[in-house]
Image (tube, rainbow, N blue to C red; front, side):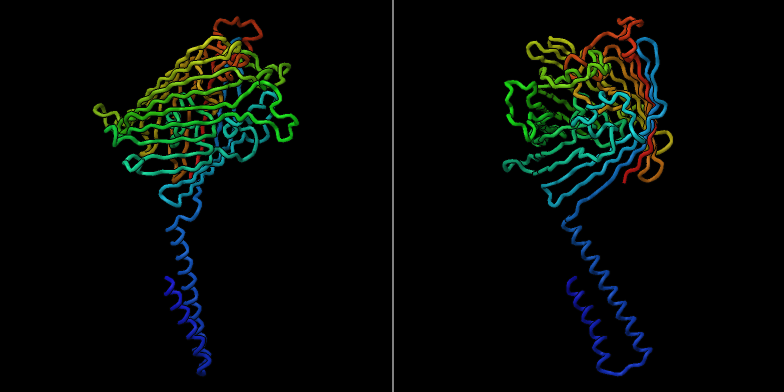
Length: 482
């Protein structure tokens, strides 16, 4: 390429030199001038193409993509005393800016910036109660302001051999994609991130190491992954005169450890299980929320208190293509998931409103089928159930009415997703939640996590007017990805 440039430049110069060697007519001069300009344009074009080829060859550029969604939610609550609360049209814009860079086969950089905002200024009717909307675990999920936040940013190292053995492995660290995990992404129409959303669906910082074990086990797609993250760093302010002066400040580092195992995975069947342990979890004391999850402004004077640990377990199986029944079902997906949670309160502390270690369970099942109207469209049905003391590590709310994954009761959902044009899609989704116990969307401690049977509360009491019995969310969105 370089030699071609030199040749063309030399050829262009020869035309100029010829002008000094002989006398030419005006017409001949214009013809030569036209040829020179044409050659110079060719040189410029070749030079530009060469730069593009070199950039592509070395992948020496940060790749960007975008995902923009505008949604409207029609929200309706039925309270335990029979009254109604609603928002006819909650409008929201969400923008994800995705970045990717891979200069070699072994090292990859990735990240995502997130903008998530309700239309116009937020009313802040209970300004104090919205203080936690900017909490690090949920800040990219709540429509609290117009800021662009880092939802994920990480480095991954990958290798095809471990200690000279044919065991592919990888290591990654940073702000990991730890929400929008497997199962939740069927109805979200997204690529799944690593955790199982049934037990972990919150933003987190940390790292993981993964080993693909198919060559050792003989089982297709088998793998094991170890992960660790930190939810809160016990750090004092920069100018604290006596750092860590208190014997017990009420908080410690909140750490999370996870073991994820994929026993078997093919294009037809996926199996996966995950165990997670989170330590030093907190409650928000004097948060303004009472023990049933209702906000009382006079109680607002927030502080943090360490309350204990929690253990979570989830396993799921998914069938991609239900063969032998009908050709329509050949393109369908059926999945089932079971999850357990076990609290471990510190001495004299309460978790989920109890001083005892409480066991909760949940199951989640669904089916996704191809659309009757288009080749790439899909529709699905899902059902979630959570017991009295069920507690998922879930704060990235999966619906505008609250997390259906964290429901202590029954949740039903139906959705339709249809492509409209290249990159453009439309979805309509309806979610119905029937709460059996209070505290589904609460924190870990006593103030907002108590599990009281809603049907046992007399409708004539003031408390019944603050507890949600059923919730409905009809959502539509228009989404463009490029």
